[in-house]
Image 1: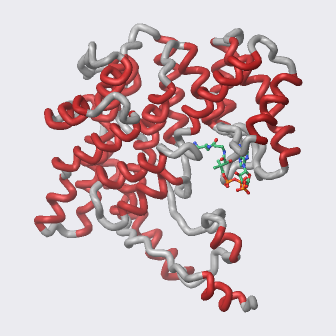
Image 2: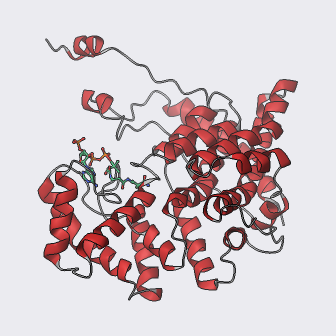
Length: 386
Ligand code: FAM
């Protein structure tokens, strides 16, 4: 059987030709109009990116999972009150020392071969993420009293992640994490972590530095950190309302959050206008495995009540829950209660999607990304306003 890299290499020439032809015949066709609102509104909805997907192989990752000693040392020296996402970003940045692409570029490699080095780097990074994450976890939440066990080369990627965190004896939790890792990799190109990785990669910066940029974006509370925020908020709610999960008690709490000028974490989305299918997949898992967990019951009540409250609030374009409204409740059920670690798990999964795209970007020879910017005075002139 062919390796992932061989499969990709075999498909590439036809894809390059397809895009060449598409551009030759249709290159001047208009695909979107841009309004001034979109210019000021975070470029929302402007059709301007290309995105695809690939699958990965656990066995190959296990073989590449060893960390260089200096990265271990770097992580070990981080103070425990440095947020785990900042530590993850630091460690990924530090992996750049062994970047095959940067070395090949410095040697003057032909640009047609860039993707092959980016592929190797991406596989190496993904392979090392569980060990880095587990090291951070043991340092921060076990006061460094334990270190992650070695990767088992014959086991799948997620088993090793769970095992290194210290939960390897729980098959149901491992199964949850297989779902989790699958769901969080899924994305399109416009979300911040995907776009940041792609944008930085377009400068031919290394996959390590590109991914670290994506992680830095993922660490924001409106993006990946929402999974941490969501469980913290649910716990605060539970501490306030206790066992009273009545519609009134919860509705009042939702309004108190909104009236204090905060968002409801885990609700809303820049693109989706319905319940996030990734939320529903997690809900299906919870209904099967933990229907009586008190925090899941609270999450279910919110699912029933929050959309109506957000609709009355009248601001969000999407009053339904997203992926982050559910994941924390599942993790805490199996004993992974350290909310500050949650976005790291999101990041491990997201790396697969965004690095796959960086490989494709280089394979298709995408150029440096450079939208045009104008001052408000220029925009005023452009739209003919006074
Ligand atoms: N609670 C309260 N207000 C909200 C809201 C929420 N959950 N979601 C959106 N709004 C407000 C938003 O702040 C904005 O208010 P202003 O006009 O005062 O600025 C207004 O509704 C319009 O926002 P929008 O156009 O509907 O959404 P955006 O595209 O601007 O923002 C989100 C999208 C996801 C950043 C936003 O819904 C939000 O802040 N949600 C809570 C945080 C969250 O769950 N993020 C995770 C998203 C997730 F899918 C991920 O990235 N992992």
